[in-house]
Image (cartoon, rainbow, N blue to C red; front, side):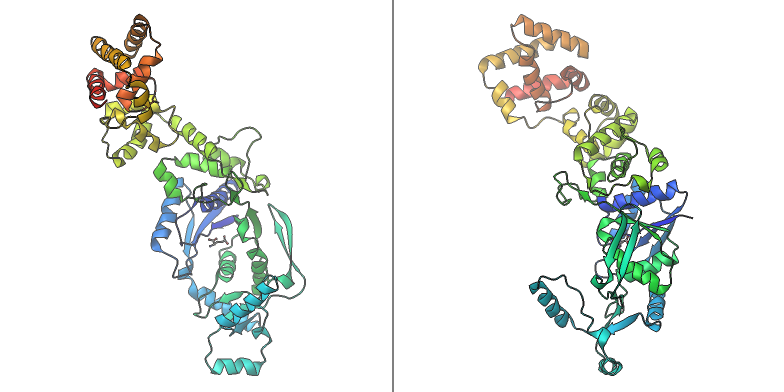
Length: 466
Ligand code: GLU
């Protein structure tokens, strides 16, 4: 059975890159009718935090990425010790007593020589007497793995093809630290093997770990799984993905009002394609079409415009009642308690324009008083006494009509004509008075939703503040 895993370290919230790795594993598992394990890699006691673990769980659940089994590395220490012992007994490891200061010095020397640093194997060469002496003194030590010093290690990557490494370039990696805590490269191999993971799908940033892990598989006599390294995600200018360019936590996207189905669709396209021409797919269709053959080698580009487009699309797939339910918490958070009927009317007007659910807050003038007016608009429309006079006249006459969209439009057009003005000369100041802004949905629809009383009050108010 195909078994994959997502193995986050709970040292931060689940960010967008991690979510993409989780999603690709999920898609592959579902497509292959296999299972997905979630393994929390929390051996780093200082940096691992329960809040981050909770955030990872909540984010995956919100995205709809359910896992079949859950593991925590911190609960598996005995197992790692057992396998470390095996490696020691079979002569694959040695104790390294080099101090931090000694290693720092060596590193600096390599830097001077402009050579990539690699541990020089000082302790690998200790005689049994020398080692015993260190032992007697109780010198602290780490355990290192004896990498083969010649030959090559080859990854047969399912995405990138054959990748070869010279073994002479791989250093004797540390498998357990001075405090006895096992390291990432070692735990990951023991876990993947014992959990019978068949395919390791992870970010390209892990490629350099893979040859080291392959050597550990061999030494432990474990069957090698398949490897597939998925491409990096870059910002639209091809720079590293920074926080501003999209590398935020999944929960931050949630808080801005992205829908999980939009984010899933968007993430599924980051480094993989499903059709030559289409990009909108529901999850079930992505599962059907997912194949490692269609995962790209080149970096994926994070395109906010596409994300917003997809989000708007998925918002409009919902009924107006559903959208109202979804935007309401964003209004409440902004301190606005919307009436149900008004909210539905506003959703009807705004849904074509919504990119994110939080955008609804831009329309708060439907629910609360207007307290601020666009300064450039005020300058343009409420400085000239003649324009103000015209506005006052409009306010008096419109008070006599029924506030229905069609009537409002007919009235405004004929008023403009009678007074020898263009429609825009009325629409802009009226919009400013009602919304405080220069842009809104269709003005006459806005007026109908606000109702006559509110509109007249707002006309009077703007005349007081000019
Ligand atoms: N804990 C590692 C990480 O967060 C997992 C790497 C792997 O998938 O092997 O990057």
